[in-house]
Picture 1 (cartoon, one colour):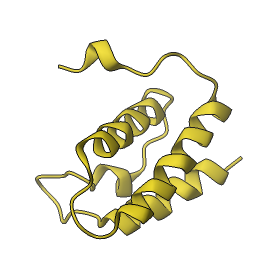
Picture 2 (cartoon, helix red, strand yellow; picture 1 turned 60 degrees about the horizontal axis):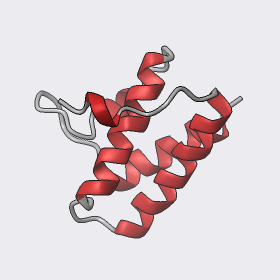
Picture 3 (cartoon, rainbow, N blue to C red; picture 1 turned 120 degrees about the horizontal axis):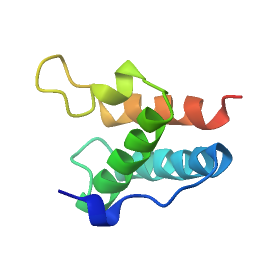
Picture 4 (cartoon, rainbow, N blue to C red; picture 1 turned 30 degrees about the horizontal axis):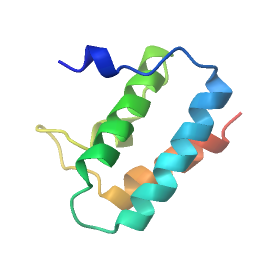
Length: 86
């Protein structure tokens, strides 16, 4: 369990900035597996969005065991959309 590494409480604006940063890093990482630290940061950002009621099916498909997985590029694009949303 990763409870000790949970993101601190932050505003939605701060979360969007973090999502944008993670999206850029994911695009830079290429098509292969993400480095463990970046993967963990993405999962933390995704969880923070979920906690705020923002459910995105593409973000869920990043590590889904039941449906086709989304590519790193698809997930990064979706994070950028969330980061720039109003």
